[in-house]
Length: 518
Image (cartoon, rainbow, N blue to C red; front, side, top):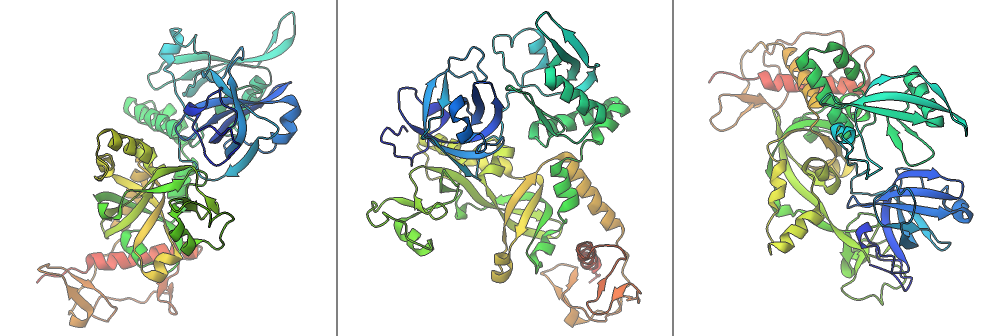
């Protein structure tokens, strides 16, 4: 919505921007920034995935140059919208954002849309000339060949040139050329194989090397699978050495692996990884909330706000009774949107537990947002039912990174918030292999007389589970590495966190093997 009266509350989307109006406000993510001799340019993307080019004229560059960084999220207020008249526009939109002296830039954290909005072209279509009219395209491929750095001389000047080949999953090769400083920097990267993840030229191109992007990870996994199937071991080895990307590190190296029973018994707040299958949605807890578009936090009615706010903002008493308020922004929420938040159960071999999932993570696997669902419900006049789109999450084996908080522990609340999850087959396969290795290490117990105080029998089951430690002939042996103070196994040279994981595994092994004939 436009803001001719300089009211800077409402936030718009790119599709709503109109050159016929004076001032606008919007929330965007900066995906590209570059400097020309006479102006500063940006490419922004909104939460609906729409891109727009923006420019700052030369005399205003000092006001904004240090405020806006690539990959940052910002609320822009009081800017103008003009007609796109550039000779070589970067975004195929007939309008662009113009910064004014009165334009304000506010950094924010939350962004629920696609981070880059890639639209990758098939190499075959580019080779056939179908992209000539588009001019600016996104491509994704493996570096198959790289030539030497050449000196290219023309009558006007001398510059550097680098020719290289990209290859897609079908084996189609795309011939590419870098010029000038960009060619020099790319040649350095290829020659030294440094850990640089991206590189920018002085214009609108942006290059990512082995970046942790969903699209790049999917291509990498597909190429590895294809190389394994076709027996191309060289390609497979090269790609496998590149799979130590941040997501893999987070799930397999940095964050400790836990089972459901472990997190239910945790006495310290921590992050952990759980491998489990989604089983049941819990519609009784709802599926969305109304959020402030600026910060993504839930908004409240005036009465609810009074019970949650630490201080009452100016103008609160005069505000309409039906107004909604944001505790995070400490102000009335003029721009709001629905955000997904729903609860469901997962299960592994030790038990089941409830997790809470939010909008951003759902988008990754289902490709749908709360806005999409509400639009569909409005069109079908079905506003009250639990959305069937969420059924697509069921019966999937996923790796979850969750937060066991002090609130969970102190209040014995066994519902945990998902910080991140993945269906990456490499990560899941490695987690499963680790599970199998732990199971193979479990020793066979020596069973003696059963103490009825030491076991509980559930229903008609032939298995009983030890619920407290008693000497019942389990074949206990003294161990020089056993710490007598806390009765935990201490491995030399291993961190306390790793020892806790091993202790947890031993407890689980004991429970797994305590089965007896009736």
